[in-house]
Length: 65
Picture 1: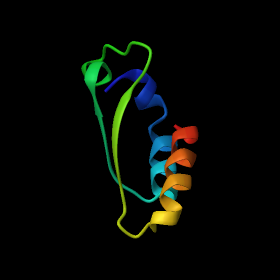
Picture 2: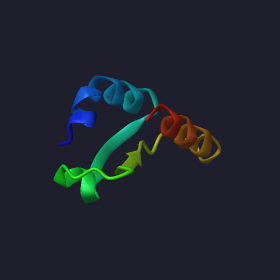
Picture 3: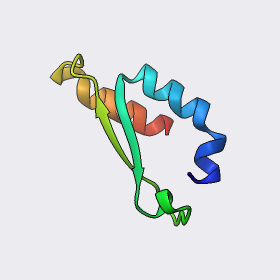
């Protein structure tokens, strides 16, 4: 795991909990400690989020990360 993510792990965990994230995975160059300009994250949200809340929840999480 890259140092940037390791240093922000508590903040990432808190944001995921607040935004009903079930799982989060990192892939691509960031997973290989070769971070370029972005990080690739795969996020699975809880099924308890309604369709109407999904978009706001997604973009709010995105702004926190």
